[in-house]
Image (cartoon, rainbow, N blue to C red; front, side, top):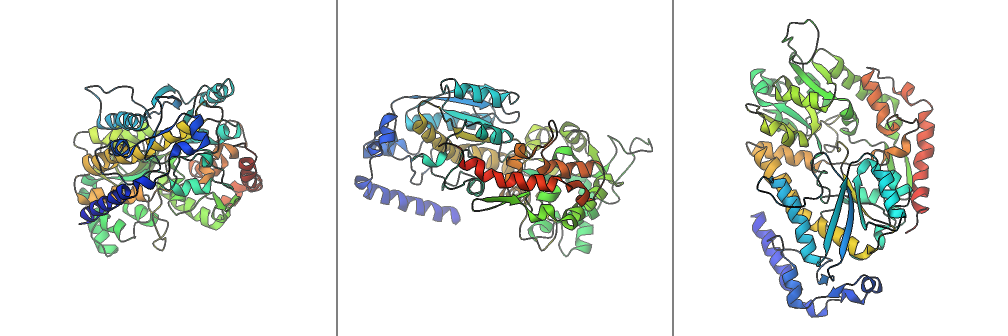
Length: 511
């Protein structure tokens, strides 16, 4: 019924757009657009410019916009999971690779531009992008991983996205909550959302082994103690918490190899690895930096020794206790779970595609990161970095066209890559039943961002060390120490000073 109502609304909107098309403003009236070579299309040409994805499209800021075949030069990092660009379609191309290729093709055709992409490794990318931008503005768009946003912004590689007329940040394809947080007095230097092929893919989730759930009578324990019948209902009722994860992981350990010590190959209730420890904190809906208008400050939650110490105590008890295990890295964690040795494990959504969906006899599903308490309003799942952020280069040759292409990529990603990734794979291939699909909805809908994580490089006070915004928490779990006051120490003062300087840094950047 909802689909029919949506279709009817879209048809009404489309009809209204034809009625009012003679009154539409000509984008070529803009002096900045004239300098970049834009032309206005006739009504009939505009109609053919829409629907490139084969769907009925809602009005877009790019309607009636065509350029003159200009070349948009793009410098992009080479992501390890999903690339931002596919040069060609092959017989062996996966569904996702096809979608990534198509979104770029559609965006180019829609605007009558050509894009040339250069993909480079993440290592050394900051220096490369800075050098290319400074030496003549060789690239119009810069696509880097999220951990590189702060240093590239500080070096002036980015331009202010709020100045471009063809960027519409009200579109559902943008991560609006994040963009609002990093906008200071109408200055915004990078953006992400569905345009990042990695964003949804890097959502942190909890995987569970369905066979072990059955063999260990997990759902029976849930029914006997929590007033619901299974793990799915535990989530939908809002009762899925860290305490319940700990309780349900009890009495699972088995010394499979009879070594007398915990180790790979044994059966565990819960496992994860170093880079995901902070999910126990973020899962409570907490952040490290809070934003109030133009003011950035350290979150009171992060400075609350009792709150954070309580989370650490529970997480340490789970991971360092008999039924938990800290894997050496993501590969070891995936191997353990794929082998059927783990009841619950924490990892990014990409593990479903990289390993679990291709593992014979592995019967699994996902849950959102657990809440800290039942009274918490909503689940919160942060991203396992890095994902991609996009910007218009400050020294690029055709910034307005580059911005329009960036918007087109976002709109086509919303129509093409997101459905391929989320609906066809996560909720399709990776879900055996409607309950599994609903859990993917819960996890992805719970996506949250933290400025302290995104600007982590600004909180790296010791060369080679992890940023304080998440490194401190990771270290306390690694060392099995819940004393948060001791962990903060003088770092709290350093973080407070640094946080207050974020707005000043942004305001000091040129447009």
